[in-house]
Length: 131
Figure (cartoon, rainbow, N blue to C red):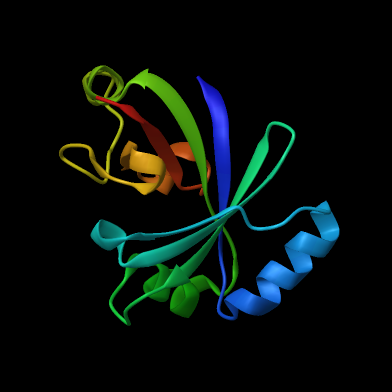
């Protein structure tokens, strides 16, 4: 398992892009809509680190709700796994509370699921991979 990316919820995506491009010395290399989450993602990368800026596409999206409740900031950490179905089954069997019953389509053509933040000291954990 490896850290795949860190997701950051933002209100003003252009302001966030300008900041992170300047800070990291790199450009957004990919913009993608994820209909299952009603979010538009903007990816930046330096060496082995990816940052995903998250822009809500609808008022009822999880990102809109997050921004209303907590404001801008880190939304989740994503870890890549080899077999998403196997990992989901393992975590369920170990008694962890998952926010999805089955993996769903995420960015980069990957399957994703989330663990409840109460399982991980208040940090939303996304696991992503192929099925």
